[in-house]
Length: 254
Ligand SMILES: [Zn+2]
Image 1: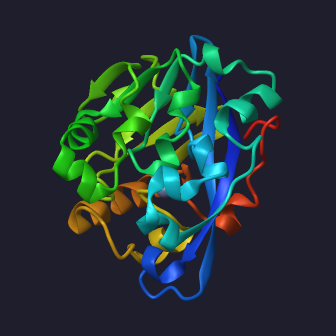
Image 2: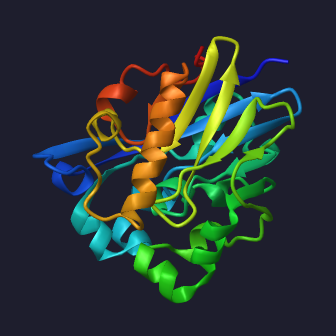
Image 3: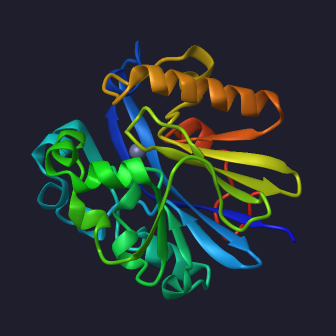
């Protein structure tokens, strides 16, 4: 049974590269990726992008700290539900949302996917539920505590029991960050999300200025490097140059 993978860009941010990668200079173009995975036994979104309020009032939605760090380039029609509808997929029929972590640019569209079960790492959920920890990470509970059915996992988790779509713990960026391995007929793809913003993050081990646990993040990068050495293609979290070479839905990633 083969699996299909689609890339959906849900807007872009721009921000200072120096904050996102040691030694970086100038501004960086940051695509906001979400992915649709179609498995014979269910449909999965990996991350859901920005909340649609960010299209007209980003400060009202995410606050002044984030809008002072990032410029928002996000128009109506770029939210995850519209992206799905544009390829004739019904947002109400998505079965599973896997959130890599709870930052605003990865969970903002959960509100638009009403009937899915969320699959998140237990330690990320617990961080999100603790008001102090959530505030220190910039989490907004209104992004993810919306009454979706919830499965909390602890470490690696095979979504369909056939090794085709597997959550991989890649802690460090946040307490319970996870990536997703998708087994395509052509080989494995690893959707790294913010375990690895850029190609250079992996090649040169240049970490962002602020991370939850530096040592854990370095271990996660080693893990991604090992997967790559074994033949997997790594999809970076916010790498504009990389992303420009990724076919967008309705074309599938092959
Ligand atoms: Zn991000």
